Length: 149
Image (cartoon, rainbow, N blue to C red):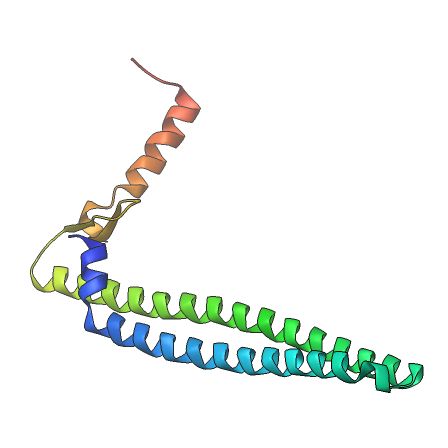
């Protein structure tokens, strides 16, 4: 099974991806508005700076620095939220695919489904072909008794 092809053609993934893009766009728009406000205030200060007293100029520059810090903080928060939402989206989709693959295998009496991915993996394996315990026992026996040729 080609896992990437399944993912790309799974309608649930497409819809989740569309929703993710909408939310990302909304967050980006919020950031752009904040950035635009900062740039506008910065330009305004440049224009009126000569007409202000030193005290007023210092206050305005302080306000501008606070706005700049808030804008940077907002950008970082949005970036973190986008990453978290993407991980949540993918994990939810992977969980649904894995659950379906397991039910499909059990319904069709399939013992093993391999997924073709960049890293390669097993999508489903029945307990009947799980050799984990045999490996542990063999390793422990070999550790205690040594390798026998």
